[in-house]
Length: 362
Image (cartoon, rainbow, N blue to C red; front, top):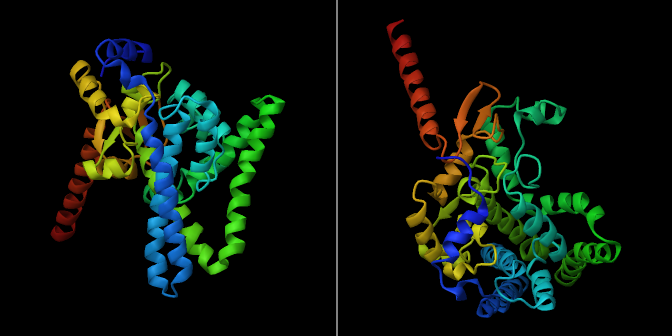
């Protein structure tokens, strides 16, 4: 891959060939909100009504899908891809983010402004992973990165079950002081509101049903959301320039699954045009591939998760990841990944084969 290009170079070239209506909101997408809310209410009613634990469990998965669907829709709404009306956008975004315990105003600061404005910047992106230099300065990181790679990967994937909501609370602590006093009250209210809503649900359905109505669906929604978010960036290089073809990754699923997840996996396209409705993302993806075929990063979702498991989450430099227990270096997307992962895999297989031969000969 060549050197970094700025976001504006892509937007300028694409806007010249894409229809103007692609950059207008698609209000019809708001219909997903009552559908997801209705699905959750239906599943919650079934959970409370049935005495069968297995059926409660199955209905929890339906509620979990409703939760993550609302999260994907909130992301879309708060970028302005559904409506330009700021009041409607704020109210709808607040409702849609209730299951994941995220406030709409905080999200717009943390995600829209900071993450999109500084994607994969080693210091300024609040969602970027750390560098070897930073890890060496913090005792908890030193301990963690001394653990076996398999343990760290297991911890990473296990953390998907809660990380999105937990990270939101870290972002609240980080960015709350940056809001003006009148905005700060709104941010705090939106941070408390989800807990008040779910406390009311807890009192209404009781502890056992609450486990199936909220806790398990919340875990499912966090896991699905993080399986996308982590693969969308954590395999990519860090960049000083906001270059979405270098610092972002589109993950592909079967078209029916992309429809169910509202096209969230088409992430390179989203980072070039954050206000673009996912309705048009496939068309934009085709245009990007025509203009910059060597720069576009795309993987099947399952394969991106596999590489996420196999590679360390520590940057040696802007282009490479490093395994601190062995010193092995893994490339990032466009700079050796996935080739280097396959090389390390073949090296391990060869090492095992040599070991077996030696044991047989002895």
